Amino acid sequence: MPRRGDGNPAGHRTCRFPPIRFPLGWDNVKSLLPCAILLCGLMLPMSDLHAQNQHEMNQQAFEDFQKADAELNKTYNRLLAKLDDIGKQKLRAAQRAWVAFRDAQAEFEADDMRDGSAAPLLHSGSRARNTRDRTAALKEHLKELESR
Image (cartoon, rainbow, N blue to C red):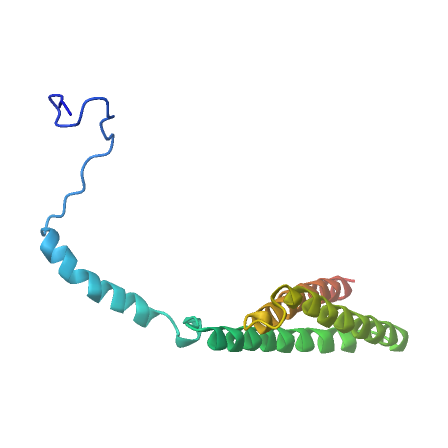
Protein backbone atom coordinates (compact mmCIF):
# COMPACT_ATOMS: atom_id res chain seq x y z
CA MET A 1 0.00 0.00 0.00
CA PRO A 2 1.49 3.40 -0.87
CA ARG A 3 2.47 5.62 2.02
CA ARG A 4 2.02 9.32 2.50
CA GLY A 5 4.67 11.54 3.96
CA ASP A 6 3.44 11.08 7.56
CA GLY A 7 4.15 7.34 7.58
CA ASN A 8 0.50 6.24 7.53
CA PRO A 9 -0.87 4.03 4.77
CA ALA A 10 -2.75 6.01 2.16
CA GLY A 11 -6.43 6.45 2.91
CA HIS A 12 -6.11 5.93 6.68
CA ARG A 13 -6.74 8.74 9.10
CA THR A 14 -3.93 10.09 11.20
CA CYS A 15 -4.33 9.54 14.95
CA ARG A 16 -5.21 12.78 16.70
CA PHE A 17 -3.72 11.74 20.02
CA PRO A 18 -0.02 12.08 20.71
CA PRO A 19 1.87 8.84 21.19
CA ILE A 20 2.31 7.66 24.78
CA ARG A 21 5.85 8.24 25.96
CA PHE A 22 7.31 6.51 29.00
CA PRO A 23 10.13 8.57 30.54
CA LEU A 24 11.61 5.49 32.20
CA GLY A 25 11.40 3.39 29.06
CA TRP A 26 8.87 0.67 28.28
CA ASP A 27 11.00 -2.10 29.80
CA ASN A 28 11.01 -0.32 33.17
CA VAL A 29 7.25 0.22 33.02
CA LYS A 30 6.68 -3.46 32.19
CA SER A 31 8.75 -4.48 35.19
CA LEU A 32 6.69 -2.23 37.51
CA LEU A 33 3.29 -3.58 36.37
CA PRO A 34 3.34 -6.73 38.55
CA CYS A 35 4.20 -4.59 41.59
CA ALA A 36 1.35 -2.19 40.81
CA ILE A 37 -1.11 -5.06 40.40
CA LEU A 38 0.04 -6.64 43.66
CA LEU A 39 -0.28 -3.31 45.48
CA CYS A 40 -3.85 -2.85 44.18
CA GLY A 41 -4.71 -6.37 45.29
CA LEU A 42 -3.37 -5.74 48.78
CA MET A 43 -5.50 -2.62 49.08
CA LEU A 44 -8.71 -4.63 48.62
CA PRO A 45 -10.19 -6.18 51.73
CA MET A 46 -10.39 -9.95 51.55
CA SER A 47 -14.19 -9.86 51.60
CA ASP A 48 -14.22 -7.96 48.29
CA LEU A 49 -12.42 -10.73 46.47
CA HIS A 50 -14.80 -12.52 44.18
CA ALA A 51 -15.42 -16.22 43.87
CA GLN A 52 -13.77 -18.18 41.08
CA ASN A 53 -16.00 -21.23 40.62
CA GLN A 54 -19.74 -21.87 40.72
CA HIS A 55 -19.78 -23.30 44.23
CA GLU A 56 -17.91 -20.26 45.56
CA MET A 57 -20.19 -17.88 43.64
CA ASN A 58 -23.26 -19.62 45.08
CA GLN A 59 -21.78 -19.39 48.58
CA GLN A 60 -20.88 -15.73 48.16
CA ALA A 61 -24.39 -14.90 46.90
CA PHE A 62 -25.88 -16.67 49.94
CA GLU A 63 -23.57 -14.72 52.27
CA ASP A 64 -24.63 -11.48 50.54
CA PHE A 65 -28.25 -12.43 51.18
CA GLN A 66 -27.49 -13.15 54.86
CA LYS A 67 -25.92 -9.69 55.25
CA ALA A 68 -28.91 -8.05 53.59
CA ASP A 69 -31.29 -10.09 55.78
CA ALA A 70 -29.45 -9.07 58.96
CA GLU A 71 -29.77 -5.41 57.96
CA LEU A 72 -33.47 -5.92 57.20
CA ASN A 73 -34.08 -7.51 60.61
CA LYS A 74 -32.31 -4.66 62.36
CA THR A 75 -34.38 -2.07 60.49
CA TYR A 76 -37.61 -4.05 60.99
CA ASN A 77 -37.04 -4.21 64.75
CA ARG A 78 -36.27 -0.48 64.94
CA LEU A 79 -39.49 0.28 63.07
CA LEU A 80 -41.51 -2.18 65.16
CA ALA A 81 -40.35 -0.41 68.33
CA LYS A 82 -41.79 2.89 67.05
CA LEU A 83 -45.29 1.53 66.34
CA ASP A 84 -48.32 1.11 68.55
CA ASP A 85 -49.99 -2.30 68.93
CA ILE A 86 -52.21 -1.95 65.87
CA GLY A 87 -49.28 -0.72 63.77
CA LYS A 88 -47.18 -3.65 64.96
CA GLN A 89 -49.87 -6.14 63.93
CA LYS A 90 -50.10 -4.56 60.49
CA LEU A 91 -46.35 -4.49 60.00
CA ARG A 92 -46.02 -8.14 61.07
CA ALA A 93 -48.77 -9.16 58.62
CA ALA A 94 -47.18 -7.13 55.83
CA GLN A 95 -43.76 -8.57 56.58
CA ARG A 96 -45.04 -12.16 56.55
CA ALA A 97 -46.71 -11.54 53.20
CA TRP A 98 -43.59 -9.83 51.86
CA VAL A 99 -41.32 -12.73 52.93
CA ALA A 100 -43.64 -15.16 51.13
CA PHE A 101 -43.49 -12.96 48.02
CA ARG A 102 -39.69 -12.59 48.21
CA ASP A 103 -39.16 -16.33 48.46
CA ALA A 104 -41.68 -17.12 45.69
CA GLN A 105 -40.06 -14.51 43.44
CA ALA A 106 -36.64 -16.05 44.10
CA GLU A 107 -37.98 -19.48 43.16
CA PHE A 108 -39.39 -18.02 39.95
CA GLU A 109 -36.15 -16.25 39.01
CA ALA A 110 -34.01 -19.30 39.81
CA ASP A 111 -36.25 -21.42 37.59
CA ASP A 112 -34.40 -19.94 34.59
CA MET A 113 -31.56 -22.30 35.53
CA ARG A 114 -33.73 -25.16 36.79
CA ASP A 115 -31.57 -28.02 38.06
CA GLY A 116 -28.44 -26.12 36.99
CA SER A 117 -25.49 -25.32 39.19
CA ALA A 118 -26.21 -21.57 38.92
CA ALA A 119 -29.79 -21.86 40.25
CA PRO A 120 -28.69 -21.18 43.87
CA LEU A 121 -26.83 -18.09 42.65
CA LEU A 122 -29.99 -16.71 41.02
CA HIS A 123 -32.10 -17.68 44.05
CA SER A 124 -29.82 -15.99 46.58
CA GLY A 125 -29.25 -13.00 44.30
CA SER A 126 -32.99 -12.43 43.97
CA ARG A 127 -33.53 -12.75 47.72
CA ALA A 128 -30.67 -10.35 48.46
CA ARG A 129 -31.85 -7.76 45.93
CA ASN A 130 -35.46 -7.85 47.14
CA THR A 131 -34.33 -7.78 50.76
CA ARG A 132 -32.22 -4.67 50.16
CA ASP A 133 -35.21 -3.03 48.45
CA ARG A 134 -37.47 -3.91 51.40
CA THR A 135 -34.88 -2.59 53.86
CA ALA A 136 -34.80 0.71 51.97
CA ALA A 137 -38.60 0.92 52.08
CA LEU A 138 -38.71 0.21 55.83
CA LYS A 139 -35.95 2.77 56.45
CA GLU A 140 -37.98 5.33 54.54
CA HIS A 141 -41.04 4.55 56.65
CA LEU A 142 -38.94 4.77 59.82
CA LYS A 143 -37.57 8.13 58.69
CA GLU A 144 -41.10 9.42 58.14
CA LEU A 145 -42.15 8.26 61.61
CA GLU A 146 -39.14 9.90 63.26
CA SER A 147 -39.77 13.21 61.49
CA ARG A 148 -43.31 13.52 62.95
